[in-house]
Image (cartoon, helix red, strand yellow):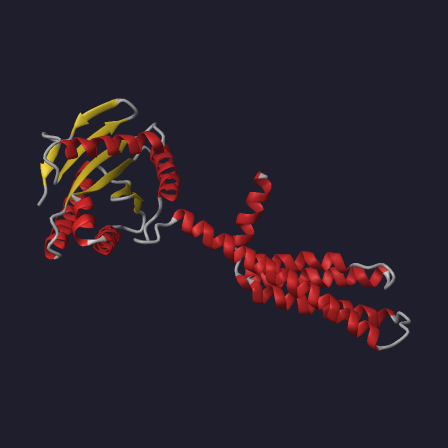
Length: 301
């Protein structure tokens, strides 16, 4: 299973032209085998190999093209071997029948691949905001935690919750609530570097992952983000604020679940207090924690 997954990732990284090229090579190899085994031994099944490769990794149109090439190769072999058909139209008919079979197979494989990719995207992406979903974010967090531990670098995780979001849905309707979530997602995205990751974890909860970011850098980024969010909410006439927990992990030795729990817990400390604030904390290793330069929470907005 692991080898299959590795092969799938390798083929998925190849370009469309490379996949089509290898598929054509496959057709030629099967055609050669078809020729040397003779017309009486059918090799039609083996043409499905390059056909499947093209349809799965290069798309439906490429699969149909390889289907046509396979039928042409088969028909050429019949002519080259001089098999004595009772009527010259029979190999043409057989080639068309094979093309129909290959066409249907390639179309189904291409459609199945497209559907799987769409489902994978939907499973890992929040459709409303375009941000990562929880599953994709946890995978990225686990990866970045491992990299931070390996290189001895810092990593910051911010957990954000919208205060009074339910009131917006109740008083202005779900369309307004969706607009508020999209605005939050947009502002999170604009705050990112290419190496950062933003996610909607569910409901009105968001997360921001800042690899190779120490406490000072995190404070600068998150406080600017909190100001932008407050300004956007105020401009929309919304009585909404943010509670944010920001944890900087130094040489982290904990799991993604533990890291999320730490940031989530810090966010709820703010929420149980005055709300509309940001709490910062630094975690050394797994257990040692220290307050970040004074009080754990600062008002924003």
